[in-house]
Length: 460
Ligand code: ARG
Image (cartoon, rainbow, N blue to C red; front, side):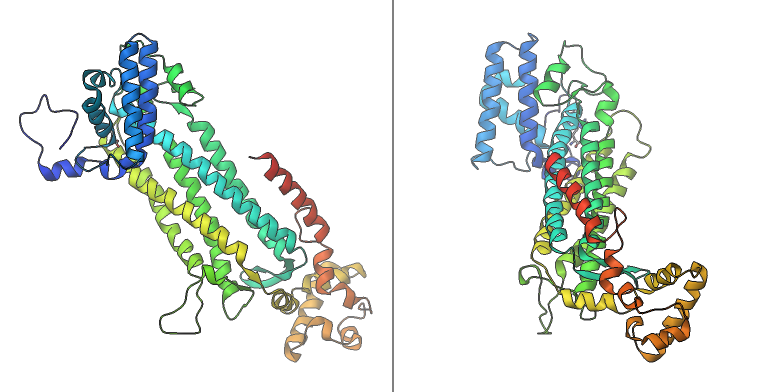
């Protein structure tokens, strides 16, 4: 058991209690962050005359040596340490002796872990943002390629009006774009350095908190030491944003699963992203989409966990907060793998255009346009709605689409119908006449795609 305390104890910790308390099993993940923060702290201490230049150099060399050795596999982070902070400090003292004992001057593990977690989360936010961007680029490419791939648009999972695949995927483009904006907002709000808060009440050493904040790439130091060691708002914000990413992915998952079903037959998932059945040879299953839909649960779980951990905690640091890590790490890993795999799956998916178009052409997706046609001929909309309702009923009885009826049959239902009805309710017209910004008509979509491109270029 390697721990950083014990002077006021007369007995050893119970083994199970020690294990229960230790966090090395998971906080070893941010070993590099702990070294980075420690180097900055040592440099600042020397700058303030708290360490000598020799001490500073020995500490920095020692910490860099640890970094190299861990990286190269010469030094293993084992469970014998209580946490990553103990691992670093114990190893430093082993290497450089007494100077190593001075590193922790003016610092507590409370502000140290607050810093490590922030450094780690900050980096992950950028990585997730990059994955979201890559996915947006894939969606953008698909939109460009499928401006005229017609498909039914649904409400209540009933065919409603025809749209295009570009338009449908464009809806997801907007969602994931907002997800990126959330990442950037969180980053901006959290990017303040808690180092120097000490255990909870700052320190009597003349630390330069602006200096460490700037060395570590923060906007500045945090402004209240008690808040600094006990704030996990940014973790909650991130988990909330990640839950929203998963919610979006799970909706797209559900659609991919439906589209891939025999009944829809809109898509074929590439072999590289689907799996077979051990018993049914014909099967090709959409497991990536199903797993993504399923994993949404654990990311929501992480959010609820941390919200609950933090609820009612008195100021300042409480050990409860150690529970923020495992679930957050898991949520981050989950979102990253889902985004990566989803991107690959979508990029390689084949769309059965004819089948999608055929599906859009039946199911009376042009009924609204037929009503609008009558409005154009002077029929009030409410009356037109009723007329087309009975027309649909007439078609259902005869198993025909509106545009399969003869003009004589149509005229029987309303004398306002004329030869131009066929053109007016054709699938192409129904889509292409929808030209309000944000609508599926090709010209409207092209404007949106141009805006999306600009966004992708500008938002690094
Ligand atoms: N492992 C702890 C955590 O994750 C580090 C801080 C420990 N502080 C303490 N006073 N025991 O929160």
